[in-house]
Amino acid sequence: MKIDEKASFVHFVYPVLFEPLKFDRHVGAVKTAVWGSGEKASLVWDSQEFPKEDLLSHVANYLNPRDEHAAPTARMWELNHELLQSHVFGIGNKADWVMTSPQGEIPFRIEGIWLTLFRVGVGFMTVRANPLSSELNAWYDFLHSFRFIQGQRRVGVRGQRRTGFDKETKKPTVSPFFPHPAGGVETHPEGTGTLGEVIDALLRTGATSRDGSVWWREVFVPGQLLPFVSLYVDGQPPEKDPLVLYKVRNFFSSRQESAPSHSDLQPDHPTLLPYADRQWFVATLEGGGFVACDAPRTDFFRTQMPDHLAKPYFLLFLLTLQQRFALMMFSEEVSQHWLVAEEEGRDQKREAAFEHIRDLLLLFTARGLFTQVMQREHHHRCYEKWQQIFQVERLYQEVSDEVREMYNVVQLKRAERLQKLQEEEAERTKKLEERISMLGILIGVPAIILSFLGVNLQNFTTPEGISIVTALLIVIGGGGIVSSIVLWLLRRQMKKEGTRRK
Image (cartoon, rainbow, N blue to C red; front, side, top):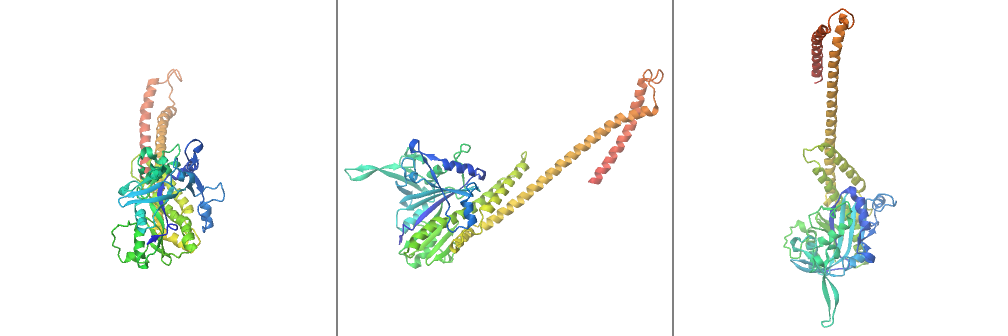
């Protein structure tokens, strides 16, 4: 069994999350990122359009706006071809690369790198890397191990490049190599490291001066990639097809012990979508792709179909991944902002957070969640299969319910808070009225007594009359008695009114 290396490839996808409000800021950083210095400085990324073939008009306009002033739903870039090849400032894809693992070493080549950012806060770093082998087992092992980019399971990468030619041995001389942006041979003297270091260096090109260098966070299994594979297997008996499909969809290594059940080997397995005779799309939560066994050797199946897989079909994979991870992010934010913590202004912060989440969900619904993306039947069936596998509809319903219920609770608490403020204001007004009433009584009652009695004050109003001291005693005594009676009656009336309101 051999692999058609020209028709086969693997796209390894590293998904990340970032702050949606900083989308334009990171886009600006990526567009202006430079590697190198002086005259050798080069822009890291070349802007790319999303594949437009077969896209519905409104979806195409969201991804590739016709109006240059319109806000794009997403942006995509490809690593500068010169930097992809450069040994000095770039990745050095023409160096001799090998993947190291307990299963052995597998030479491979990096054929392209892409960065995609969606406005809702989801991004993808895609690395197209193929093993330099036509052996099926080598592809099994590469699919299995290359996913681990942080040294898990003792998986790493090692590079070396030709630096001369030994005339005595008549063989080229080689030196260790590791990409300069990821530390170079200064930090990797033997040329050995991890793919994660290279991906981190590429992602740091999206950092801004106002953010730290690490502006993203992981959303999938930490340090693990999702493969999207196009695998063309030739010279295989048809009865072996189910086992190949089983190993590919589980990303098993060639030495992985397995005992598939009868249902695991059935052609109508839920993870499979038939395309043509002995050709299937494979869709799982860990990745997927396309497997063709002894496909016809025609231009369509061996040239055009792999190109479709790398462009429109891979775009469908990214769109549904974006939907899944965006919904997971929304659900996570709801949980984080619903922590019961006693702090000043908690309800106001929670209210602002849920308004932000609600707005993001509306943006996602309008520009990220599509019932149909492409018109052709095979593309649409594939899109529906990915949505089914990634449980997009269920996640969307759960998140919508969470946001709706939590937002209703926030609004209820806001109404309660406003009612409490109104009651407190009414209580303050009531106390102020009581104080003014008391002051009026204390001043008014003595004045009424004096005017009613027509008291003349000796040496003040007339030469004869009662003394001022006697008048004061009369006013204080009489006024105090009358004021007490009036205040008692007022308080009694207020208590009755308060009891009736309750």
